Image (cartoon, rainbow, N blue to C red; front, side, top):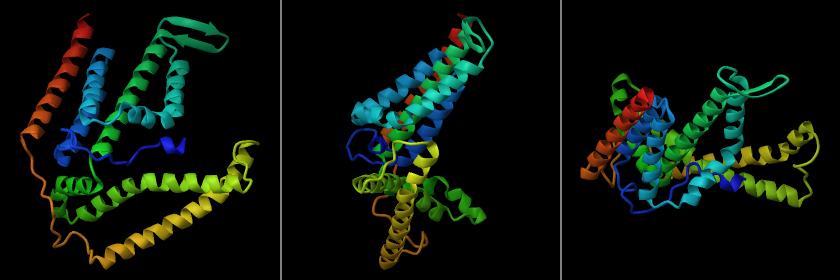
Length: 270
């Protein structure tokens, strides 16, 4: 299960999505989130799904990676669906047994929320899949640069966010190695009561925390050896520049947002 978590991973490529300005990609992701939350019907949500699936297809990332990113979150999706299914009591009753009541509104709301969460996961994963950590750091810093006027350490915040995101796959890999090592030593983490399973996780968390601090110290020393002292006076090998494809991506996103609005209105009149 841990190997299926792909958050924070970057897959190099030369697709049109990879070559977009990272600042534009962050703005488009925000616009995509707005698109999903202004959708009130399945028609509007379907337009949003077409948008993100089309972007995924253009990126050249295998669809199995998309499914792989959804697999660890299946318990969350099931839990969200059950909450809406069981606790929404209004609407036509489809099934009733003692205290258990399932209504038509509960079923549609559960399906709607699951599709929305899936779309959010796919869209946010696509950002990290197609943007390197360095590009992501520069983009966040440039987008939040107006905050420097009020003395906000924008560069440091962008660097911390990107490093934290970048080390998610590394921590997952370390956790998997530690779990395999403990199982090889006879540790039982899959049987017994909840309390017993929780205690069995202690031999995993302790070395994981120690290795995390050791890795942080090594990273700090490496940055100091390279004379890193924050963003002051720092230059960049690659300057961020917008091009025609960036403006085309903004236009297409605006068209899809308009499509979501009109799809909801058409469904309303129907």
